[in-house]
Amino acid sequence: MRRILVIDGHPDAGSYCAALAHAYTEGARAGGHEVRLLKVRDLRFDPILHGGFTHPQPLEPDLVEARDAVRWCEHLVIVTPCWWWHVPALLKGFIDRIFLPGVGVDYLERPPYIRKLLKGRSARVVYTQNSPQALAVLAREDLFWRNMRRAFLRHCGFRPVRRTLMAGMRSADRSRRERWLREVRALGVAGR
Figure 1 (cartoon, helix red, strand yellow):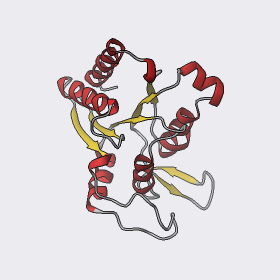
Figure 2: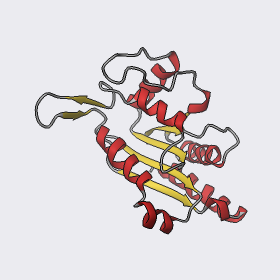
Figure 3: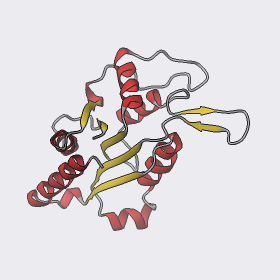
Figure 4: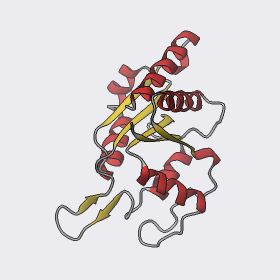
């Protein structure tokens, strides 16, 4: 059994992403995993990293708990919509504030110039987008996925990093959305 942290990154509690995060969490608990569900929209924090990495900004109590949950987990699941080829601003602010040097990475003066602090953990990104997947890949080389996988999660040491994409949300009917919920729940049961 695994320690799993599910991050619901949608700012709207009534969203389909919130339903996906709940389905994964429910499945993981049914699979016997120890699960924590973190809803970014419910946290009280300033999403702006005002001083960058050069001027330390104290973490608010909710972010201290979130940081500790990231360190605790063996498997991280991020559920988010893809907006403008990126995550919503609130989730981006959360990432900026949590995965700082000392948590996600340490920067070194000599090669390899970086120490990945979250090695030994796996990750999955469950995301929705309105456009069909083929169009996203052809038009934008799936910039969202490349950024999440390479520039963020692998950069911090997560491996493997997998995805579950619900493309074509705008045209997805009720039966397709219910099928996706079942698929995500099954991923939770398996702890993947």
